[in-house]
Amino acid sequence: MMTVTQDLSFITLITNASIIVQIVMAMLLCVSLMSWNYIFRKRFAIKKARIQTEKFEREFWSGGSLNELYKSLDHRREQSGALERIFGAGMNEFHKNRATAGTDSAAMLDGARRAMRAAYQREMDALDSHLSFLASVGSVSPYVGLFGTVWGIMNAFRGLANVQQATLAAVAPGIAEALVATAIGLFAAIPALVAYNSCTHDIDRLAIRFESFVEEFSNILQRQGR
Image 1 (cartoon, one colour):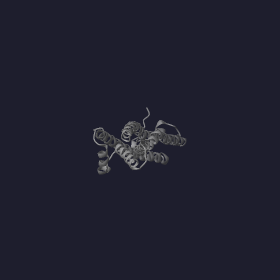
Image 2: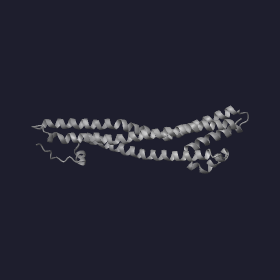
Image 3: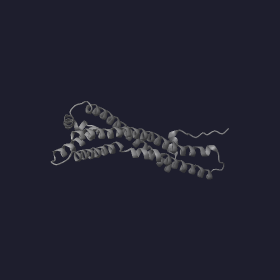
Image 4: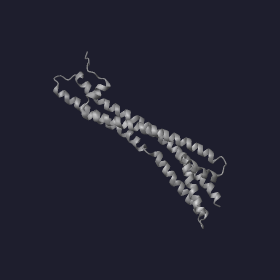
């Protein structure tokens, strides 16, 4: 029975790998750390946006004065959420147009709607930031790891040319070192891809709420502008 006596621990496999494979592993580890940083930041940002949205919706539909709600935004601008800023943009433009002589109700409503759509786009851009990085990590990392694996296996088989008798003991360490690159690539890709899909789903749900609010608030402004 053949026995492989080499040390095949994870750390040893990394330290004994060829320089190219080590560079690939280091790149993947750095990318993995960056993606985890973005994952936590994005999850906290989405959770905060959802809480702020729910809070503002309760205030908006509580039946209070919209003008008083708009004035209160100045006192809590630092703590305002995405939906509050969309509301503020619409009210601000509506008041400007109303103060302009000769502006009809259709123009006032159109200006407020455009201001809210612009604010909506800014908020969505902020929520979508760094998602493309997570998508890239999820799709590219396995192939980068595979490149390291192929390179390591090539070196392992090239090393057999200097051996009198090819045995499992001779080729196993090189193949194991190469496969570590694939493992690290998957370690970087899987969390990034799962987080990307989860964050995209949550952001899409927030986007639907924002768009619904814009339409509902536009109807309210239309009635006020008559």
